[in-house]
Image (cartoon, rainbow, N blue to C red):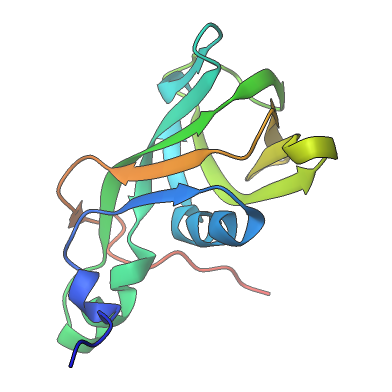
Length: 159
């Protein structure tokens, strides 16, 4: 008898996720919440119609295991890639400044006609990056081994 893999079985493997619809995107959005990155780590490749960010992502998928085992929380460097991008707009973002650290709060998608739409990266401090896309095509891939979160704590959002 074959059984489905459990969430815990994938806990130590690097993530590689693809979002092609809003439901898929909600998973990537939850895993990238509270990711931080220097503004200089954003790349807009016009000819390839690709927008990418190298993120320092909190490992939300490992939080429960860290608490259960009494070990430190972890972060990992991940690349968030959006393909089929037609236009990039930003608000409150100093692009290219290595000293400006941005924090990703959420990723939203507003569908347009025929699969087009606007993907919006909501940043702390009223910043936002809007990507007009021909189709929703987002990839999240871990590119380093996890490391101990410098704060040694999980992000907290007081209500």
